[in-house]
Image 1 (tube, rainbow, N blue to C red):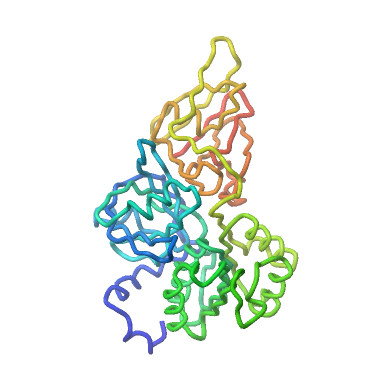
Image 2: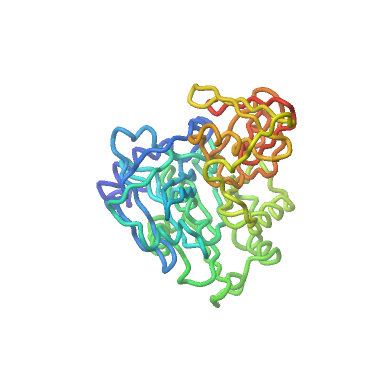
Length: 392
């Protein structure tokens, strides 16, 4: 951290800096942990825009080891609304700091949980929070001189807030370029925090706000990001040949456009990290395993799985076409999951025996697939017996 900035740090920031040494990721970062829920108290609910809030949880000292995290990871929340269990996954928006973690929640049209969080969630409330998960983290072993770039839309800024702040704090010579698109200025989440970050690192943070429904002085930053505008941004503002690692977060269409365009201009896919906050596809969210009845004599798949050291077995009718997650939930309601859409990776397990086919995968890396890991919410048996392990 530059010497001229040290005097401006608060005591809380000084303590938090001790956590940044391992907060970004890299080859030495710890692997995924078994997903478990713990009850945490809400310390603060802070408005960000008219339709979004930042929620900060207090993490007691006894649970600190369970809730340490890398910049870019996420947590799942679980609560009951109108008598129904609801789970949602949200990215952590602050650099790792002792005793707390923060997420940002943007209200979705018709969204049960996000609407409830805007109107009924208050400081002092308690929620079940899963320990941090996810691999939307840096793979760079050394940030000295590194140039990291991010493209985000709407609430996709959440993990990039943590990544940008952490990358810049980890090295005096690292740089971060952020392209952030919204409809208008009033929709920009963390507007003041981004301005503060720019003030703190004026020469090392390049911040570009793109507004689709508001005219800006620069024509390039006014309008929706389509392929033509994206290519112009890459040619004039970001300069891909100087970037060591890319982070993309937003709706499926934008992330896919960015991935395809970057690859088309020669960026190695291994240097592109991405995360979706929606696939754009509607999907049913299992609550406790949809009812499935095994009729005597009908063909079934046998699914054996291990969770928390305990083995269980469930039979799934071939005609039911149910996922491994849905079948497992019928006999073990504590099987981990959050989005059930192939996005968050919470339901990840390893296939030990047999084979499956996955409908979608937006969470697992190629090396994980090679080692036999699957998303059980998207996996369907293709052999008579399948054995999966949630504990490995």
